[in-house]
Length: 212
Image 1: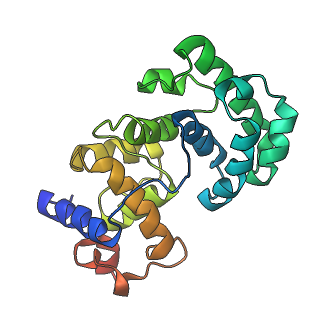
Image 2: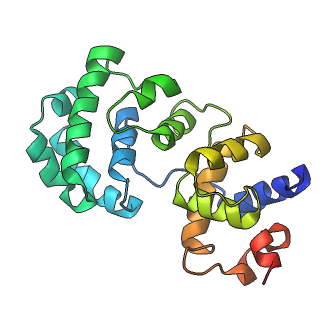
C-alpha cells in the first residue's frame, strides 16, 4: 500500500505533466457530454470527437434527440461501433431526461445509472465534470491499468474494486482530475503495449518501474 506522501507525489507528478487534467471529449451542453461518453464505449475519444459535431448539429436540442429516428442517429454514429445499441440509448435517454428530469442531467449516482446505457463509469464522469462532486473515480481501462502498475490498487481488473480502492487513498478534491490525467498518461507514456518508465516522473514511486 502506498503512503499518503507517495500518493501525493503521484498526484503532483501527473499535475505537472498534464496541468489541465480535463476530459478529452468535446461538448458544449451537459447532456452532450453524457451522450459522448456513451459513444466512447469500445471506441476512442478521438473518433467520438470526429462524429459528434455533425450529430449535435443535426439534433441540436434534447427535444430533437427525443423525437429522432433511431436509424438516422445510427447513421451519424456508425463508425463508433455498436451503433444500433448506442443510437437507441441516446434517443431513450433524451426521452427520459425530458420526461423524468425536466430536461436536465441528474446529479446523483442512482438517477444517472437508471438512464439507458449509463453505468458507474459514465455516472462518475458526469458527477465529476458536470457537478464537481469530490471523490469520484472514473475507472476506465487506462485508470485500471496504470493504477495497478503504480501500486495504488492490488492489480485487480474489476472496475468496481478499482474505484473503491482509489476512493480510499486519493485526495477527494483531486480524484476526478487524477483519473483524467491517467488517461492522458496512458496514451503518452504508460501505454498498454509498453510502459516508457525511463521518461516517467512517477517511476521513483511506481511498483512496475521498481521491478525493471
